[in-house]
Length: 99
Image 1 (cartoon, one colour):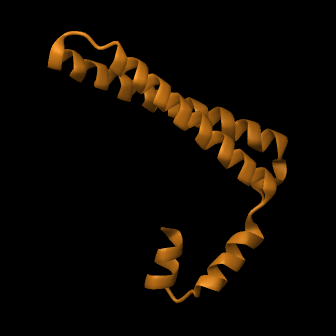
Image 2 (tube, rainbow, N blue to C red):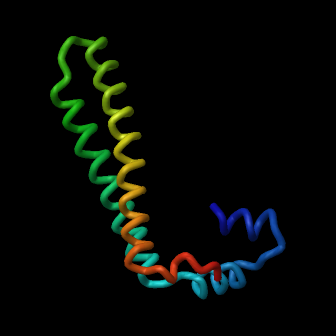
């Protein structure tokens, strides 16, 4: 989405966008993003599947289970994001430097 915004609506070329993007991306950042997104997706998938498979009480129960899953996943995403970012920045303090 950022590339489309920069190239279609802005004055940046596609090559210029990728050159700037790849020059500022580091291996620890890429690994951290992959781990964080994998953990988040895995947690959301497991929680929602468990809530959906154990629902009782008809349509009212489904609504309650969806609400519980959304609230639990929202809180868990915040916690996973906090722990992953704190770990990444603790192990790689050079990530704090603006490039």
